[in-house]
Length: 100
View 1 (cartoon, helix red, strand yellow):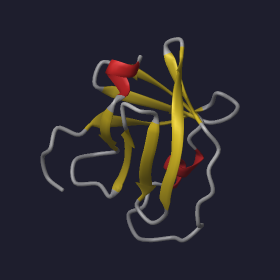
View 2 (tube, helix red, strand yellow):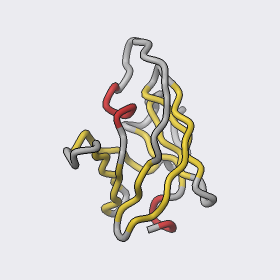
View 3 (cartoon, rainbow, N blue to C red):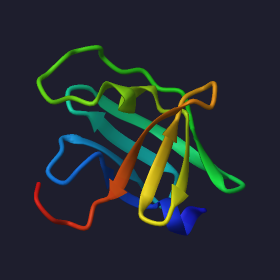
């Protein structure tokens, strides 16, 4: 799982919403308005995201479900984001360094 998840994931090219999984277990991200800073660990074919605090600001174009992340799984170049109950919140794509 570690090799597949590391790197930056975005909701769509050019989006301000992202998740950046580092090799050492650090996770940073944003829903487009609020920052996320926490850690993660592999759990079989998934990764579990540790609890984190974030502000609750709103901004045009934000992707609010990103801030409810608890668990993820990778399917090719798609990151499937799940909440605490295992509900599918949305999908992200691997950022290949294109438009920012």
